[in-house]
Amino acid sequence: MSDHLPEESKKSKIIIGTRGSELALWQANHVKDRLAEIGLDSELKIIKTQGDKILNLSFDKLEGKGFFTKELEEELLNGGIDLAVHSHKDLPTTNPEGLIIAAVSEREDPAELLVILRDCVDVQQKLSVKFGGMVGTSSNRRKAQLLAIRPDFEIEDLRGNVQTRIQKLRDEKYDAIMLAKAGVLRLDIDLTEEFYVEELEPTELIPAPAQGVLAIQIRGSDTSLFEKLQPLNDSAVAEQIGVERKVLNMFDGGCQLPLGCYCRKDGDLFQVWTSKASDGTDFPDRLFLQETSTLGLAEKIVSKFDANRKFPENVFISRELSESSYLRKALAKHQIEIEGRSLIRTFPTINKLDPFILRNVDWIFFSSKNAIDYFFKLDPLLPKKVKFGVVGRGSENALRHHGRKADFSGEEEGIDTNDIGKEFAKIANGSTIIFPMAKGSLRSIQKELNEQTKLIELVVYETVSEEDVPATLAEVLIFTSPSNVDSYFANNLLDPDQKVICIGKSTGQKFDEMGVKYTLPFSPDEIGLAEAVFALDY
Image (cartoon, rainbow, N blue to C red; front, top):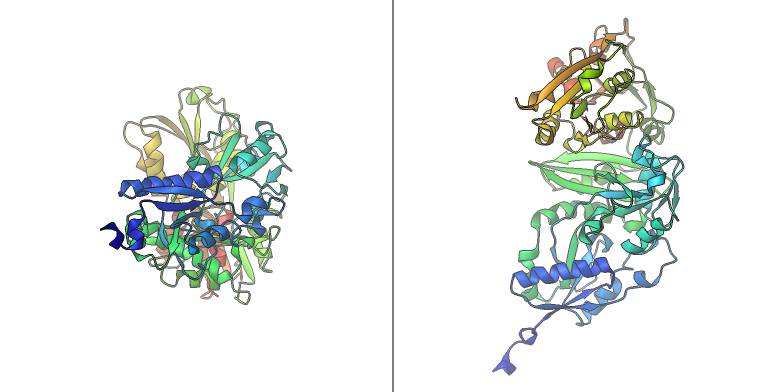
């Protein structure tokens, strides 16, 4: 009777093709286990790819061009295997004729890890690597974004599997190396005992399209297997990485192009971050967009990077900017002039700190860079186990200048201080928290904490508006605090063609009261502001 069964029904096992690295085997075994959960028996077949054999070329000359996938796909087309498991980010954006992606996995954390030798750590520097540190990565995407934040870095190529890369750091061939968090988690490697690990969220250092996702590839004609694999398909992830992969496809650059693209869903909105440079040393353009649908989203993103698009000629920001500031460099790339000038003055409200006020404090939370600077001018005697909370990357970087690292940053919660407060409350409720702050602070974070939490509010500075602030003719006005808004509009009006960007919701509320439209960056720092300027239409 069995002689009359269809050919594919005679197969007792599904043959899974995979590369032979430890990470590739983990991925293939993960799929094998998932198949077993739905009653399908399978076995692995290891296939060596060109990317595994060529170790003398920069990673970006291999990744994304089929060097890690071609042999697997040929074996699939020849019938030697039934399905292939890939890291989705390694796949070209178009399948070879006859092959399809039948399912994509859930997404592992797409963050990046900067793994640093302990004697090369300097928390006063952004990214915590000592000045002039040598960082190992062969990804032009990572290189461009790292150099934009830390132009003093020396970037050197780094090839090999995860363990090989870690060993090269252990051998002190680099001061730090970059690794995808997804691979470290999947291999269950503990890096923190031996190294200092700086985690870079995907909204800070934008990952490769589809980073952290597995792709299951089969023959297009194998409809029966396609149906069997659908319980393994994460449709929500497929929709999100579909935007990322379409952006990559429309740029037609593969992974040689220094392109980062990350899409996620937040409530009813699809949020997408994109970073693109011409090469690893080019200062990258960054963009943040959010829409209610993915329909046409990739096309809208790509249009913002059109070489012929119009930019403003000049921008004003109500804050002094150094010549090396991220925002100044991001705008200078497109010949956009920027004037940075504060419209307020700040003064300390206290000159001496009662040493007993900090005795039993568990947390110190800062809502602004000024609060950080004025607090540390008081030379506080801090408890050994005190933790620090900040609203976002701007405050986090200011805290670094005083040799301290934030234990909580509201960066992932974006511009909504209420959301930041709610997240902070999850870990800090019931503890003792001191809030160094400005006179007249809105107390947005404090309002989210419960009654069991002891709050100590310490007013360390106040602001005074400058008098007779002159109007600016800049096409874009960036306001960095409610006080700066009050100071500017005491004597000035907004021209109809001027566009407004506000660094946070409390600043934006001033324009809500005036009935003026404005843009909020996702993150209240210079990277977020650069993204917001780039997203504007002119």
